[in-house]
Length: 328
Ligand SMILES: Cc1cc2nc3c(=O)[nH]c(=O)nc-3n(C[C@H](O)[C@H](O)[C@H](O)COP(=O)(O)OP(=O)(O)OC[C@H]3O[C@@H](n4cnc5c(N)ncnc54)[C@H](O)[C@@H]3O)c2cc1C
Ligand code: SF4
Image (cartoon, rainbow, N blue to C red; front, side, top):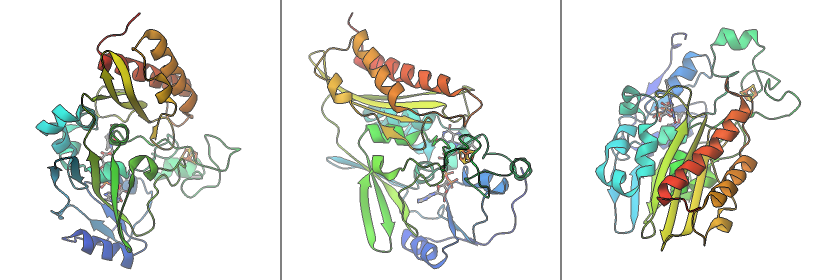
């Protein structure tokens, strides 16, 4: 990895100041924990001018549980999410996802906002400048051709953040601040299936946090991921899920996936599985839905078909565990 090239750093003390800086400098870039952005910059991917450092802003470091909604600020660290006692008991999918990200040193500084706004990843992209140059770069940055799908006109880099699938399964909304004021959209709609531009953020906007409405009585949730190493590794596939069961019958099922497509997404068609007990047949049907909707491409050293299969198995195992037992 190369050294950082010289850069200008601004350190706003409020989100309003950060927004004003972002609007005044169209070539600027936000930096929070820096654990994703800095490796990319040191690989020569982008040269933002200036960097706008969010780490000194106190107003987005809150985790608040209201009567019927959670508010979590963009500046909350992954370590806080991992260790927060009420999140662990009420929304274990979120604490499990946070605990699975990178290593303890990263999690101490890495933020919710940075994790939701991660860049996509590809074995042809997350490389040093000289490596990419010797490969004629690629469509995502400085090149003309996608080495993964040369005939297509788009980038298929995989979106590989761990918090989003947990939060999408929990039906979270993301809070955004821009020149026209604040807005809020379902987190599932925050992502676009385009590896070159995966976020539905308008120019000059930033993320201030997420909010999560109270969950239905008896909701159970979890997060599971497959990775090459058991620590400090992005997901080859990751699954967040929430279920509601009453009298042994599955009433609601939300499953969201990451690591396989250019965006994290909510699995479609799960309502057809509700209203029944959880059987192996139901899990088989769930696995089919997953395999049909994931689209892993040759963006990692691990074969695409493995990622497709493992996504289905993770979803099946997780729902089996959350249900408590699988009837025959
Ligand atoms: C060795 C290693 C392993 C890793 N493993 C994982 C993993 O397993 N899973 C995983 O999900 N991630 C992983 N990461 C990536 C990263 O550590 C985390 O995703 C982290 O949460 C990023 O948060 P950050 O605050 O450091 O983001 P930054 O690096 O500061 O920013 C990331 C991006 O978000 C933008 N951004 C930051 N805050 C905001 C905001 N408020 N509004 C709008 N845009 C914003 C930045 O401009 C930048 O584009 C890994 C990183 C490393 C180096
Ligand atoms: S998917 Fe294609 S365009 Fe996107 S980063 Fe990989 S090689 Fe580049």
